[in-house]
Image (tube, rainbow, N blue to C red):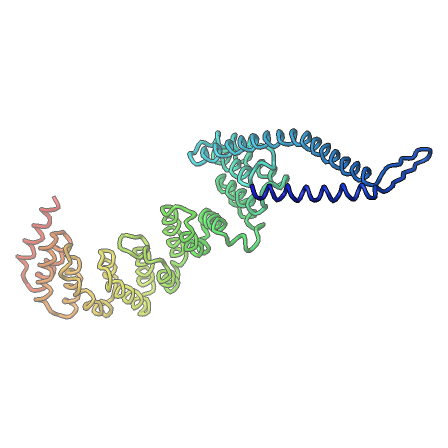
Length: 398
């Protein structure tokens, strides 16, 4: 209220001043234009100018309001269109996740105008076509996206590589990968595709080099990585079957998971070393087999390792005694006792040999243990006991 009173007083004072100025000197203004002339006072001319400006402002505001209505309508329809495109995109991506490839491709292809689509629309539409087994259609969609420039060239190339791999066209996939820059080839998705290509081409060295990065990135299921890893290192080992030093190098570089009991890598290595030792019958080959077996026995005692010791000469077998003794109490199958019995024969200790064969046969009665024990008894002159033991073993086999 006080502010209104202040404004009122100021307005009255200003009005009184203007009235006094007008009454004392109204001024004179003459406007001429051709045959026309206008005579008026200065104050009236100023009043007319102010009134004209107010009228001009009002007209411009009316025009702006009139022109804004269609623009608002266009904006509203545009929002509606964008919402529809978003719903179609959501439907397409959800269908892709659910594995409904035909629904996904149709929804993503109807994403709207180019300015309403994301870079994922053409890529996932092509992938959906690939999963439907229509590789040619997928490649055509990628060509169209590349021509329109609706997605980066590197992403289009990666999807094209995946299309070729799904179709089994490894040569085309390799040529497409060569089009990527060095930085694009180092992306997690590119490394996964390169690993898959190396697996299909049985190119084991690049595959084993890529797998650690692929596992860390999580772009490939762990079950698939395990298959690639096992086959890759087994392939590398088979390529080194004519060079024991190369086979040992592959074994040392292999992941620890493939060195665990039950994995095929260790038996494959033993086969290579045993064949090499038997083929050349050299001291170096026997020493290599003995050394790797001794290292293995520090952690695991497996039947395949004990079986491989049969190929060792007496000198190398004697060196295995200490490593075998630590597994004696855990030898439920008796195989460790059988090898120790052979070592006892080399050492000339007949009593220990007989006791070891008896213990091995008691732990796991088998024809091989019975035959070894019978041979030991026969060496000691106990022919009747040896015959009785062999007869018992033959009866068990029947």
